[in-house]
Length: 357
Image (cartoon, rainbow, N blue to C red; front, side, top):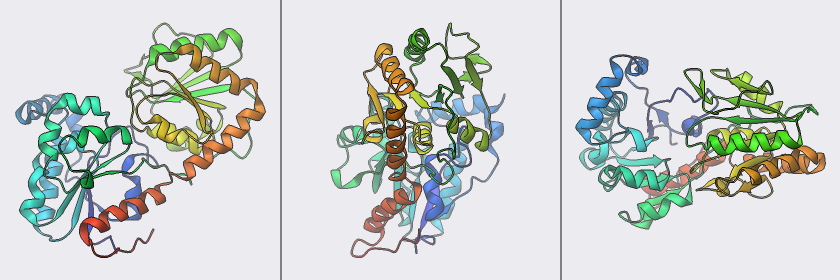
């Protein structure tokens, strides 16, 4: 039984819907430690300056007051327990205070990292806060080489990001309307996407485009793209998000860099072929015929792949089924089972603990 020995530490980020987010695999194993206070105030007038002060104090530019208080709360739990495992879910941002807590408390401490290796290397502090961990868990093989610079290989694991395939699922009936969708803004190459959309419209002026979560303070990240055929949606519910996935034909993701991507997996679980930039770990997720991988900063390749899918209904249906199959292999329950294999090695090296997922 893992529930009594595995604990998850981390803030839940505002852009994660109820059925989204890396930490959702934890519903099948272990216990989430809830932050002791509501951190919405840290995003306000007084919270941002305080977080900036903590970032300067710790030398960690991504660190925040919310993460610091959460770590203190987790340390209290660690001091009250022995031979348990604590998993920091978003260590890129949330790890500083606890970096030696495993040595102090007699517990195991592991941490997941999500950002590209180039960004982590630029931070510099990641090496210092990571070297005493019992293990790091990565979401892409492309991150491994960076961590191997200062950790032994047997402390580095890769477990791919998961997705809720029960909630995000294909529509019972599909529409013939040529609709493409993109979701999210982190590490996106919107200039290449903007050019690709224009190229698609030159050949298929009926194509409609939906952009979810791509605006900040009502300002679009798409420069010079003002057309009635594009619909911007922000702050929508889980059910609305599922409906717009199900109403689309193709999901397009133009990245500057990436390891994994939550929205891309949701689109694939919804049965959408993906057209995405072939960068970082994206090829580890889009494979087995689930979509098209395009060279970075190549709007013509992205547009050509999109047009192939919009023009060839048989190809679209074939890749739709392949995309759904690929997502099913990344279901949160399967990712939880893989996590449990790692937890077993760290907690009870001589035997396998039972996973009750």
